[in-house]
Amino acid sequence: MNKLTKPIHLIVWLVSIVFSTLNAQNKISWERYDDNFTVLKNDTLKKGLEQLKYIPLGKNNYISFGGELREQFQVYNNLNFGDVPPTYTSKNAHQLWHRLMAHADIELGNHFRFFIQLSNTARFFNENPIVPELDENQLSLHQAFGELKLQNWKFRLGHQEVFYGNHRLITFREGPNTRLAFDGLVVKRQFKNGSLDFFAVSKVISKQYVFDDESMHDGLVGIYGTQFYAAKKLGLDYFLVNFQSRDRQYNYQTGYENRETCGIRLFSNLKTINFELEGAYQTGKFKDLTIDAYNVLADINVTLIPSKKGIVGFAANLASGDKNPNDKKLNTYNLLYAKPAYGLAAPIGATNMLSLNPYIKINPSAKFNVLAQVFFLSRNSNQDGTYSPGMVQNRPKPNALFESNKKTLGQLYVLETNYQQNKNLSFAFDASYFKAGSYPKATGNGDNLLYLSFKSTYKF
Image 1: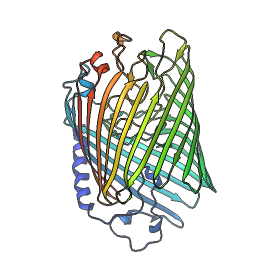
Image 2: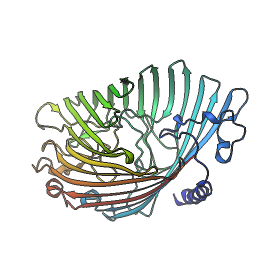
Image 3: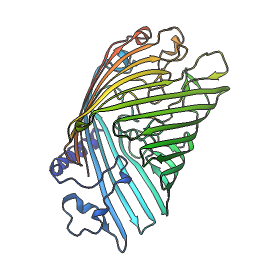
Image 4: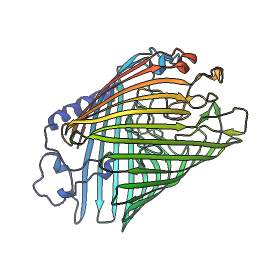
């Protein structure tokens, strides 16, 4: 690992310092295939890294290059509430996450393009075992797809990142070091006031070494639509997704899962008061069990200081857990590929969960924003455990199922800040403190958890 990643890490760090003072460029998106540099297409006086955009390849053919360097230093105190596997050397850890991504976007006329992205991620200073899907992938073909563009239609086939809605169903998972991609077909249809996507994909399983990723272990087929109303002040998302897998476990039982998820999301973009309402219901089969699960979320916020974008809000989330281990039903809500609801600090995902979440957002300056929030967390059902954001059960231990009736997980205090120096360079500092409740204490050490993070990101 060190022979490969340390020279790369040193070189790209020096490159980022050299270019960090360049002028901001055009729109750089979370999903880099959506970058918009079209104003440079016919510009003959490009400067600096702008010269890497829209390089002619003959008549009406172009190639553009881009990339990202992210360095993130993290401190963990009491991983998983102090309960770590025997293979771990310590429950406390400090580590450096390194991420380097580079891509090429090739446009052939008005109807065809190819997008290719390489990724290099690494973890330093932490002696605990590496989790490849989160920590390290020395070199991977992260995205590689061809796209056919017709009037109001796009057809994409290959490795690609995908996200929908507010990242609670499918996401590219920006928080962890290694981002998530999918392998398959995505068809996009654009309407006057909305869009409709059809997808048939399989999650790419990120491995630690060079070009060793895998896919086609599970399947995800569905539609996701968005419709806007009242001059885009109101929006409605709707979705229907089929998930098939043999990789997930519920109360440590493994079997074939064939699960349908249907739901809607209503949201607003108003001046003072805004809201988001989302509900999803799941049915299907897991082994010989009938799936009967749900997730409901409500979020309302008020802008109190318009000049500073000062917002006060409150959110609540209720996700089902299994009610009775002896019936013929499975009530555990499957998060599919949602974002980590409680950040990188908390080892739990938003399933079998009751969450109450007051929060405050403010922009003290145009470049600086702050989010402070508190999560009051509890199990929904005491007949089911808790699961990681990746749907891996982590509490209680297999030999202690159903022994505890405690529900309270505790309180999670979160501070997130971001300073956007320009469109290329940003810095972020995050801090979280999890005060463990009765359930972590009854099913393990139940230590309080502390997390600190400093991150710098350069994109071009």
